[in-house]
Image 1: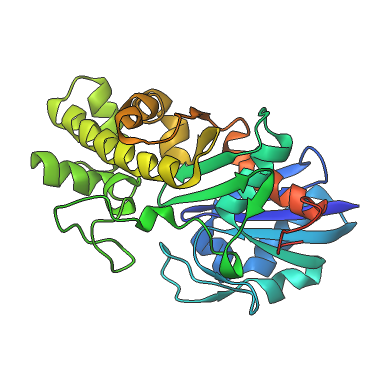
Image 2: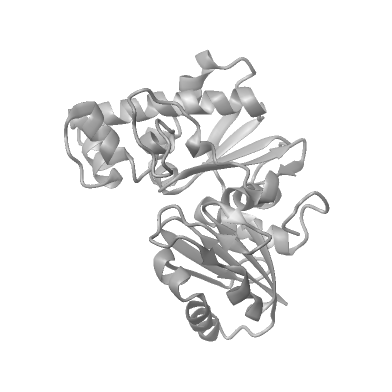
Length: 294
């Protein structure tokens, strides 16, 4: 028996096959995957010669309608994608929000010993998954955790969702160059260039990261005040690739803004495979109750 686990991110999609350590992990562009899921999966599975898949779990970085099996991609040029029907050819399908899957993966297979765990991804977008007293929080229709759309700014910054001054509009990988332009007047090609130039002492890039950390501190303080986690773990390309610049400043930045005791803050232990392992947990029937994905 094997599980097929699919993590549809805002930029890339990870495909994992296996029921423990994944025997196949393949990365493809999400646009390519969503345009022809069947062909992409057939290619992946034929290369791995695995024919005994009977459970499928898929996570998506964006709003879901689990009853209809539909995903609304926020950063891809597609309005609505049916993700359940194409995957049913490979086995019974479970659909999970990507950050919900990530916190499941970290809780069951990561190196943690807490029952109140908050996972936050900072990548092309920003989202969260939450375990409270050992129980998974999913929200209505599985859409808990769109924390990137909390209002934290004050300079009338448009967010891709149509809102204004949202966390994601300042600190996501897609938005960091615009934060640089608004903060310093300087143009940067992408978030990677901001971090590279800051590492080389570029003053505009350094000032941009200072602004990012200011907004991040406000947003994380809100999350601590709301959910009182024992530990916060961070994933997503921006956080995982730049832990010294993104993760290390969080705890000092939030301490003066919280009413609750400060949690531990660290990089997620499963890194880019946290979502896949959360889908593995869902295929294994974890948690035993309370999870709408199982």
